Every structure is written in structure tokens, then in C-alpha cells.
Length: 295
Image 1 (cartoon, rainbow, N blue to C red):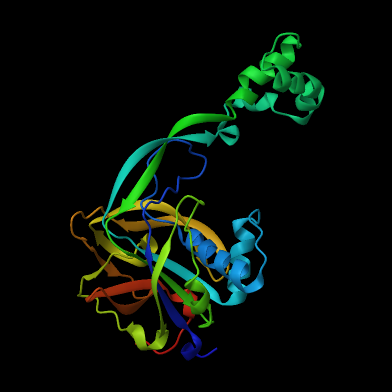
Image 2: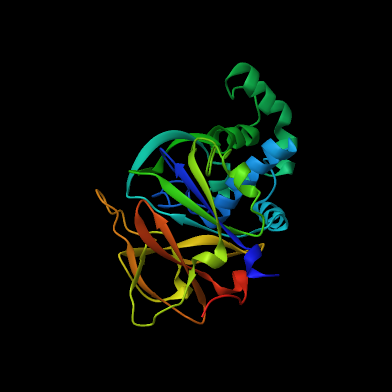
């Protein structure tokens, strides 16, 4: 396929708060930015809901990313605004975070055996009159499936930007309809959507130059990086998901501090974007677009 059929879709998004926890962790600092898979999920949610009139909230992310690839979504990145982190207390569903000894009690055998006693507890509000075994199941596991827990929040000081590499420029019309990024509480407001011919953005890599951006960068694409912190994020490349280390810009409050880096010419393709009047040099994996009009 000709490179002229590849597009960069830039979506300007206001996110009042973001709360994306690392996998299998209930209470910790939120990731400072949504993973690429989260961005793709946000776009596909808008496409499925508004274009197709059907949205399956239970679909696994692997299926969503595969469908996105079939729609022409090859890659996604996020421009991280200056941010602050905090903790909030909220009621959390804790079943998936149970200790091993508790989890052993939450089996079909135990629940089936104790169903009548559990219904009695629900009706009476007390464990009196039920078996000791089923009372333990309720007190030790069921009653703790929801509890108050601290949750990490990120607050952005300015507009964020999501970048999608795609072969389908029509996706831009649906990107306007993104209403959340991450969980349902993380409401998003799209300010603008711009579509560029990717070939027009590609620039040659100069080995002696330090480039700057606040888009997060896969660590494997750079030889050096400053003003960044490494996070493990879920990346989606041509429909395949993999976890990897990313260089994520530091907080940078009150003004944005860019990542200063040197790309690996054999691994990265460099594109130039103008955002808020400043130049961003964004490395993307060469495998996303193969070979084409760069030097």
C-alpha cells in the first residue's frame, strides 16, 4: 500500500481527571497517561456507539484492538500535558483483588452450597441462624467485595492530544464523538480533530540532533532520553497488543517540559507536528508503516 494512504489523526482532548491503575493493583498512583490500547478503546467506543449503534462493553481489549485494525487503526500515542497526582477515597469493587485464602472460598461449589443461607442473610441483615461455613463465606469474602479504598487520580493542567496512525481518514468524523478515555468516570471533551497525510509529516533523522516531544515514546525507539520516567504501558501495533516500557514526560508544572531524546534510525520513523505553536518530533515504530518516502 502506498504511504500516501496513511494518515495521522490528531485529536485535542480535555480530560478533567484520569484514573488508570496498573493491572492487578487496587490502590496506588494512577498511570500519568492512558495506554495506547486505552486510546484505541476510546475511539472504537465512539465508532461502535454512534456509527454502528451497537456497543459491547464486555468485549476484551484484544478483540477491540483487532476490530480497530480492521477499521484501519495501526498505532496510537498520547501527548502528556503538565499534570498533578493525588489520591481520592471511593467505593471499589475488590473481588479481583482478594487474598488467595479468600479467593479459594469464592468458588461455584461454596456459593451453590450457601445460596439459601446467603439469601437469608440478605433478607435478615444478619448471619444468625446460618451455618458457620456459610457465615464465614459471607463475612470473610462476600461482605468485602465492595469497600472504600484510595484511588490514584491525575489532573491535567492543559489540553491533551491523542495521535492515531491510520489508513482510514474517515475515522476523524467519529473521533469528535469520544466522550471518555478509560473508565466511565474519566469524561473527555474533544476540542478539535485534525487529519494529516502522514507522508507530509515524515522528516529525516539526524543522529547529532536531540529531538523534543511530550508524546510518550516506546523506550526501544530511543538511545537516550531525559525529562522522562519509565512506565510499562500496553501498546498496540498493527492489531497486536504487547506490554513494553515507555518514556513518559515528567509532571512539568506550571509549564510543559519536553522529553529530550535521540531516536534509533533503524527502529523509528520521525514525524513532525505543530502543537500549540511548538514543534513536536514524534518517533513511531518503523514496522507501523513499513518503508516509503523518508530518507
